[in-house]
Length: 141
Image 1 (cartoon, helix red, strand yellow):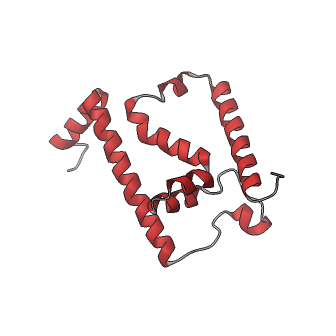
Image 2 (cartoon, one colour):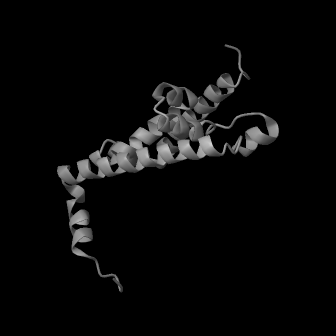
């Protein structure tokens, strides 16, 4: 197809975006893609462990707020959901939010002012970093 022409399946997919059935189909598509990605990352990690991917942690030993995101995928791909949650609870919550976004629970987010969204992101990243520092033993228990 060329010149912006869309096929009938694409048109139906786009038209269903605002329907409850379309939202549920999108959630299933996202969950399916997420499961496939998690299993693929887990298998790839089993075959070839690249070591620490976080540059901050690799060069300084200090974890960043996003440390554990790859581990979340690896543990979820192995079916260890508790270990995935322990690796980075913020990444798990963000992932669930993205998976469920077609159902509309995140609409409130876009109704917030930019200042409030940035404040929430700052607080969440700070809490995530504190969790990672605790997880790696930089903070007392």
